[in-house]
Length: 174
Image (cartoon, rainbow, N blue to C red; front, side, top):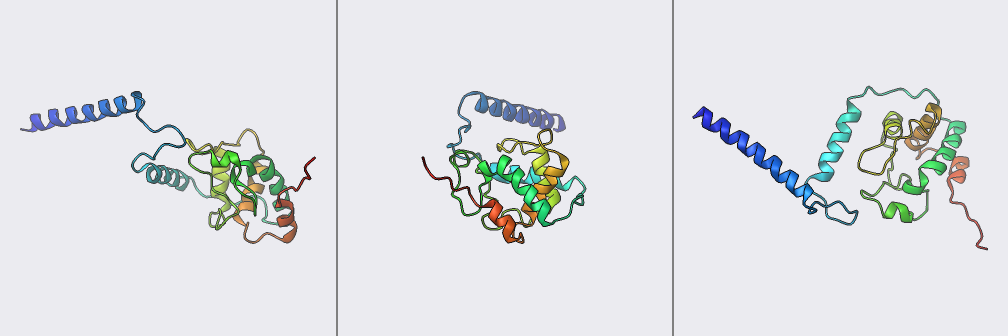
C-alpha cells in the first residue's frame, strides 16, 4: 500500500513537472506585457520579494534625512528613476505605460513613504527580477543610493525647495 502511494506520488509530481515544462515550452504561457496574469502571479511575486527583504536586517541610513541629501537624491532620481516612476504632477511616461508590471508612480498616493529607507535602498541596490526594476549597485555610489532612498521615504515631508527641484522641466517647443 505504501509502495503504491509513493509510486503514485512520484508519478504525479513528474506529471506536473512535465505539464509545466510543456506549457512554458509550447508558447501558451503569457509572456507579453499585454497578456493576462498567471494565477497567483502577483501574490507569489510580492510574497517572495517581501520575504527576501525581511530576511535582511534593516540598515540604519548612514546619511541624515535633510534638505542637502534630498536635493542630491532629486538629481539621482531624475537621472535614473523618473522615466519609469514619474515626477510629481506628471502623467506616467510612455515607457512606464508599456511595462509589466506597471512601475509604481512614487510621488502619487503613498508612494514609498510608508516603506523605511532601508527597504527602498535594498530595492534600488539589488533590483527586482522580472519587473524591469534594475539594480543600481554598480552604477550608483552607496551615498547616492541612500540619498534617493531618503528622498522617497520622506517624500511626504520634503521642503518646498525639493518639491521645486522635482517639478517637471518645462521646455518651450521649438
